[in-house]
Image (tube, rainbow over all chains, first blue to last red):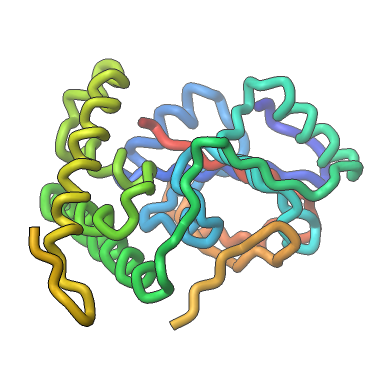
Length: 200
Length: 43
């Protein structure tokens, strides 16, 4: 998306990369970007907006009110660009677009706090370059938030870097996702609930 | 414990993130402008 010279419009790019600025900077520089790119190391945006996939487009008005939320937003799709144009012109109606495949969040507040804490701990470990421990902590978070594909990809990036470079192996991702879902379900079945233990 | 999920029509929390040079950027820095936020990742 080209940089804009409008005084009343701004573009903010948020890189959901646990590897930080080092991972995001090449893409920002190749694009010749003049807008700001920040890094969301602890998935703060993901928690606040409750998304589990990316890329996403968020439309925020001059007062700081969220007017549009588009999960799966792509800057090269015509319909997305039409929404942006309408937003800039002040004629966009509030909306929320979520892919049909999106899984609704059924976590309790306590479970969300536990997942958030595990994500933050993983981010702290990553900052200390203790990558495998960070991946282990995020893998624990996935037990409570298995639909969180943003988190799952971060784990894969640390544990299986060869599957992302030089190209991203999407076929492997599909197989790995199925394997991990099966493992997580088996682990959940063996966890005690508050009033009874469920044995495998 | 309280967790606030922002939905359409709600005010965005004033989140703060480091830019690529480590400078802190606040969402409130953009008040007064229409803001399009694009969330992406290198993977």
